Image 1: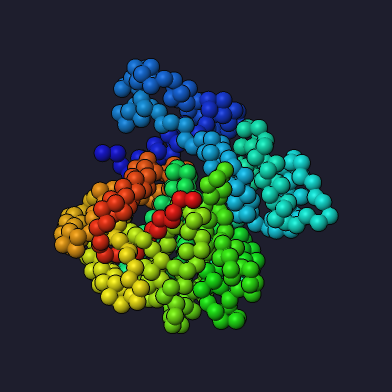
Image 2: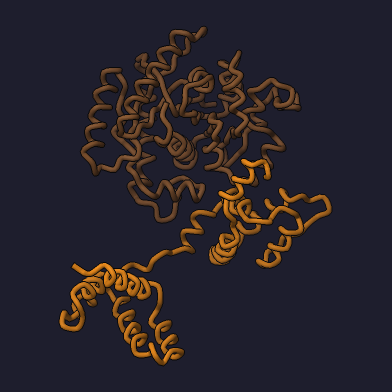
Length: 177
Length: 290
């Protein structure tokens, strides 16, 4: 039975190993003399964790590390989230992108929509009589027609800007919408 | 007749499923003054814009000058109050949103029973499925929903209060059938368990008790059920159905499809056999295919 704190610590370290590449650990090692050795060791572990499962399991020697750690490295956790793919799946149609735009705070005037579009490198033009609704639709169309990779980048940026729906709804309920 | 059993979650997810996975034209009607179904699928900005421009179900139902639709055209065409959530090719997913002021109907119930039915009759040709998300307490809203529906689906948590809620509901339906001036044949599709944890004997006892009660009432019990999962909380927070929610458990993703399949099957059975059963809570109405 692993003590709880040790378990938490190991989970954190495994999390780091899953989230960062060998190069990241090596790079970080250059900036911290105190942690240099530890980071270099983690780089080695990250390298092993990225190898195929069977090979890693064979290379894991019980004498080198505690059993729990060996078991954990033998089945390295999968690279955590694949946010880009999930985001793409979720916001692939114009309607879905439009819904996402609606969740962005302070995106309610034509000027704010044009500003955001420009900052994202989108070509959204504004004609004299264009209102927010129309511009929002135009922006959604512009995003929908981007290449897969570029769209994922833009959507990831937009997701960062989405505000709290709960607070918004509270304002609606209080008649401050 | 019981709060917190997952009526809204089930109604929204089923409606979305039929649109997304069954190529259907779907309308979701929010008939609860708490308007959680509206909050599930709409962001607050869109809701505010829609309410100001087109109104909500309250404006369709209420005749009061201060609340009814100002535009005569809109009165004749209730669909103008609907909000199209999603549209792909010939299929679409519309919402008839609600708001807190729907409670006015509960306080002023006179002559209200058939209003929703009349509204939906005008648009039924446009939809393959109409889902009505009901309020948890018995009121004129329940009667309106029963009057407007062909079928009733009852989500039920396996606990003691739900058994009592189910009994209350059956009583309400019985009273509805006795008092309804225009006998409307509304059929109970069945009971589906929700928020099942599979980890307590109390729950297992409740389930077997519910089964016994349901069978004695002649009510069908769905084989498919919704297991308790945080994926549903995530889905509500993300304002997306559970089957589109990132990192949702695969069991939760597939559960909706299973319930939908059983719902379709049960609808067909009841339609073809002409079996008359009793009704309700979250209900479904199958419109005619155009």
